[in-house]
Every structure is written in C-alpha cells, then in structure tokens.
Length: 296
Image (cartoon, rainbow, N blue to C red):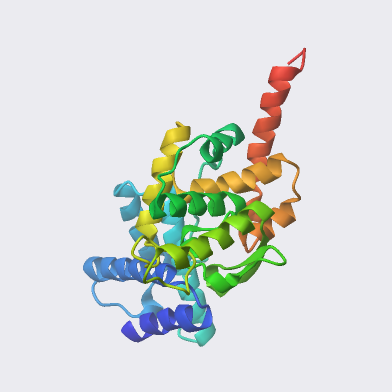
C-alpha cells in the first residue's frame, strides 16, 4: 500500500505542483483513511477496498461530529487518489462511484462594510514605527488586491510593476495572475521599499514585506495583525485575511464588476467558486430595496 500512497503524493508535488500545505492535507487525510482500514479490517490490498469500506470510514467521521464540509474534503481526496490509481492501472474500477457527498448548507462569505473599510484607512491610528508602517501596508494590499495570506507573505519586490501599476501574484498550483494597483497603493509600496533601505540596517531585499528585524513576515504575524485592526472597526465574528479577500470580491460585485473579471482577479479556477459573491450582491440589493421602496 505504501508504494501507491507515496506515488500519489509525488504526483501531487511534482505533476500537479500543489502547495506544501495542500499536499500535507492530502497526506494526512489518506493516512487517516488507511489507518482506519487497518484497525477495522486488517491488512487489505488496494483492489479489495470497496465502497462499503469507505462508507464505514465516513460514518465514523460523522460519529466524531465532523462537519459536512470536512467530510466532503476527505471524499474529494479519496476521489483524486483512486482516480490516479485507475489511471496508472493499479485498479480496474474506483470504489468512489457510489459514494454520495453530504449536502452543505450555503453560507454567505463574511465581509467588512465599505464604511468600516473607510474608517480603517482614514481614522484608525497606526503606530509611528516600522511595525505600524508594515501593518497599514499589508492591510491595504489585502483589501486592494484580494490576495491570499500565503500569497501576501511571499510577495517579492520584483513582482510589482510601478510603471504599468500592477502586481504579479503567484497563486495556488503556481498559477500566475496579474492584479492592477491604484496609483496610491503603488506609491505606498514604492515608499515602503525605499524606507526599508533607509530605516533597516539588515533586511531581506527579495521579499517586499519584512518585520522590524528585516526578515520576511510570518503568516501568524500577518493573521494577528489583521485580526487586531479589524477588531477596531467591525463586530463581525470572523476577522482574518480571508475576510479581506471576501471584502475585496464583494465590494467589486456590489459595484457592478463583471463576475469573470472578479474570478480572474481572485485566481479562481472556475466561475462556480466566484458566484457565491453574487449572493452577497443580491442581499445588498434587497436591503436597498427594503429601505428605499415605498411598497417594500
């Protein structure tokens, strides 16, 4: 079983070029699945794994109170694994054909209202030191580009084109996308880069955002900074970099942006992932209608 397992992981790393985080998730889910099989049914070959075995595992996950979303993710991992084994000839039929994923209740993406974003950049005080300068810029980049946390900490100085005013972002699966920058953000990034050379003795000149010691930012630092500042301007439950990504997309769609364009800016592989933001737009329209129409 180990050879099939390791072969698939190598396929994810070197052919699919998934991120280390995604590969780790696949690895852990598969390890959990095979450990369950061994404990419950003893040593079995790949060809002996049936849909009944898989349903047993999924039932055990449900008993452990795992959410439908988490269970669906594990089903997706198994589908990819057995599809790969089918392609390589290790099995003749996938056991996933009769596996039905549990339904997930749709939740609208949480986002920050425009008035609160205005407060964040106009009224919130940032400390007058390197940390304050860095925090304000990272918040501005998140909101103005919709990039992911992993993408932000890995921005290199040479990814920004100041003349044409855009940034190249390396996203999931090493897919590159281009996002336009406002003149203000372009100037802020350029100013930050220059201040880095003036204020810091030793600094990383490859990555754009660095801490007071000149080192590349840790994801946890960025997460906590976003949580702190969003806590000052909004009462929404979730306060994270991903909420700013949702905010970027929602504000674009609320302003009439074409959904395909939003898809490209976010780096989504399919339009289905982007369509969730139209629900937020509809909710906004309902709110406007309710407040404004005499017969509402």
